[in-house]
Length: 231
Ligand code: E4P
Image (tube, rainbow, N blue to C red):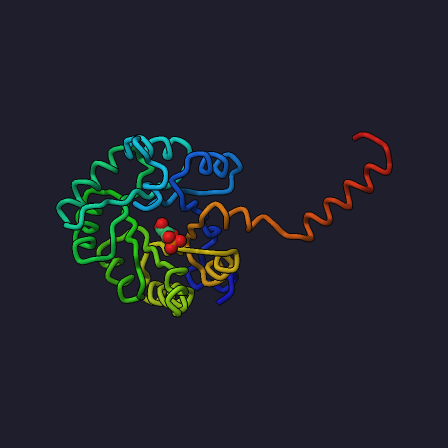
């Protein structure tokens, strides 16, 4: 399906989220106007937190970005997830609570949504899982593309399947293509009509680059210099 033939008649562009808890990276991308939000996970938080209070880091991230910031719970039972989720949501209005795609996670999702808290259901590896997350009221579903590719399956096929199922049943849960490893993944997510994509900083800056852009700019600069004039 091409971008122009989207049956939902979506007019918005795909949202780009940065998949990191690194504040310097977040500020750089946000100030450049390149991103619409942030996703984090416990592994990404562990890379940056050190002795700092994770809640302080989430607050700083929310203040640096004008958009949703996914913050993941670490409890494994629904009650614990809801308790953590409420604490996270109280940090800042940008927070979206992230829960894993387990029975307990979906119970927590339903409960948090009942309290008006946005939820990102993560670690999705099948379209039927995605359907269950939608039934639980998920705001976002995060299919992990790269991790499926890593085990010899097609991650993008999963994004495509979820798009078809959600469109078929008019599901409003947004598809957040995650675990993207290279610009081709981003392009494919756009062509399928994913609502959002989250990418690590390295992939974000790869999107900007093309060797012919660098070569062309170099040539323009050299020609201008040979003129010996100022603008
Ligand atoms: C998504 O929200 C996850 O944080 C992330 O995209 C996982 O990516 P990885 O498979 O590269 O760790």
